[in-house]
Length: 236
Image (cartoon, rainbow, N blue to C red):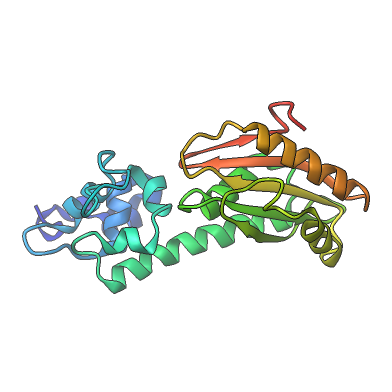
């Protein structure tokens, strides 16, 4: 059934205006973003299929679903390009929504201390790192009130004590006049359990930054749909 065949009160746009966005399902919200379906498939069916759990991992050929809203928001431009019916305009809109989400959470961290909102820190890092296909090391530089000054991706590739240079992290901290940092990187494999190398790297960076009186508040490991705080695990 197409949207125009639904009763007026059941159409996503009218439903949202009458009852608010929380009244809509994930598929209905996505349908509003997509606006139109493709030949033989209405926009609601298309939205529902995009959010299906099956197919949320890369397989040969187009994906049949991204595993819910979180999976879709973590999709890369190349992932979206594989989906029949997602032309440049629709892909651009989905990617724009993702970027708006990133900026909204970043603004939240700039206005509030990271210690007061640890969930927002994890959310911000997931939005930035969870979808990456290779390891990325990011540092969130904080001021004396533990508010976000800047978040920078400093290193990419297989992370180790030899590929993440403490000197570069120290220089960036001095450049931003940071009083503290939150370290973060992703595990493309999906597991967020810290490896011995992760623990050793954290200790090395903590010692180097300590020489300039910059505190390491946490090291967060990100995977699709999850994030682990090494501070919460007692590993700092």
